[in-house]
Length: 104
Length: 200
Image 1 (cartoon, one colour):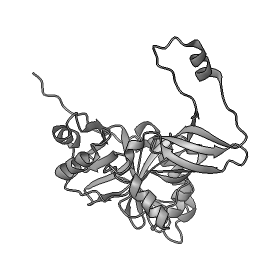
Image 2 (cartoon, rainbow over the protein chains, first blue to last red; image 1 turned 90 degrees about the vertical axis):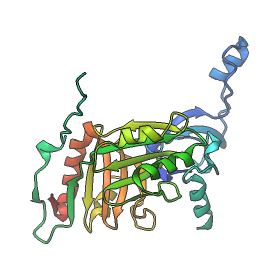
Image 3 (spheres, one colour; image 1 turned 180 degrees about the horizontal axis):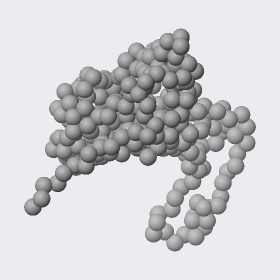
Image 4 (spheres, each protein chain N blue to C red; image 1 turned 135 degrees about the vertical axis):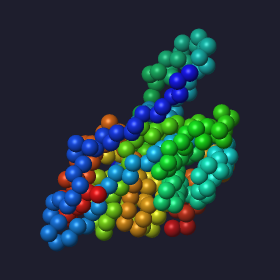
């Protein structure tokens, strides 16, 4: 399985670490809503199809990525930085790489 | 007050560093391995939105103007710089003193300076088979169009980080953890045996 890191380009999955389900929403740390905490810790969609996931390119640029992966085919339909502010702000590259890849 | 002295850098490769030709070199040496031993190696990281200021600081200190593009970089033979992650850069210089020089211009509002002069070992692999040997180690594209001169790549070899900069058409500088450098060096020597290599 290859994941196309927005900074490094296509890399083998061995360079990446799965950081969990990307659909979870962490309650406010002060929240005492136990149902919300229970859902955050235990509830998973477990879809047979596209799944939002968080991955870290731990063996490369070490950024955290939002990945949409099909759990049936392993096809990856989108990869983006979790922190969206690397784009278009003199970020040294990620936007430029995407532009270059769009052209090719 | 006693003036602080910087410790003499010692090569971790020494017990396995054997100058001369090795392996299958009867038909010619196709790989040259050296340790470049830069005087300073630093990593710089910009806070989000401060990347342009950090790139300007790199130009001020080193005189090197970073090209745009992910992993973009350049080398003038003495100083080298390349990006290895969004807003993060590795800089090496033959001379000591990069970290204090950067600490003066990279203010806490711009980003951070990490001195890795004693933390990384820089190994240079050159020769017509350099791409071919490195392809045995790393699952990245080493062809010139995909990995242009000056550019940097951050990747791993058996879970050990390696930062690679292409400093010539058939020359690469590899920055590895100092504590893993000897084992990586031995592996690199073994991988180069079949094409004949020379340690300089």
